Image (cartoon, rainbow, N blue to C red):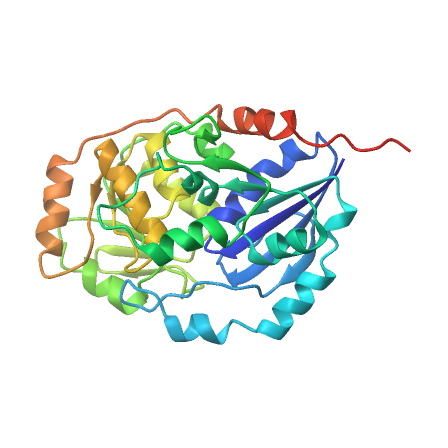
Length: 333
């Protein structure tokens, strides 16, 4: 088969998932990747045939969205041209991990596509939402990258088309241990803000991953590290607990490792609010905002947070079996 795989490059989760899936997809045929967006700190180590600046989310340094930067990145004429030129009609199977350009190109040409990934799970009303639903957020999740079929990924299987998360091989094969430090990944905070947040915990050690630095540095009780797959995996495998945003892949990996989690979803990012609702339903501690009580909240979490462990080792074969069970059969020459 000729497979087209669109990867949304806002954040690192979509990229990590694509790299894990690539060896499995190669068993079904050749795979060409389309990388859309420009706000990730990981490189995509697969054959990327098409690239676009796409439309990306950007964050300020205080836990929220940077709306001005987001609007500056939207170029309607460029996006319209890329929709017109993207050759999705030349492929037997189009897999779309939440990219608008690919969805629009398929709609314009009448090409079937599969939305595969975390956002696809929100087609289901059974997928957890926060108590206060956001109409705009709901519309975006359901309409931004519309497809012919949906195969969702989430912390739990809320419907028969929703599978558990794709976890990196090094996490699946790891032997977790507790070396006492706390791993921190809060991408919507910058280095000065992160230092101010965690220097107040003089009796605790932190390994903090920061997208603004390119070289490791030590500041008091904190080890600041640039974002990399290998370093982050090593840190998570050995940590006592994880403080992270309301993303999907990172909490999923921590759940598989059996690490205690404190989730701090990005303000006004509806998908992350939904993820926090799902995590809370599982018993994970979530914090809606960082305020003057942050220190007390963290100490309470360290003292009282439950350890929740999930087995996500069968997610890839189960999800791909479902994907290819109904995939079109290519015409033989």
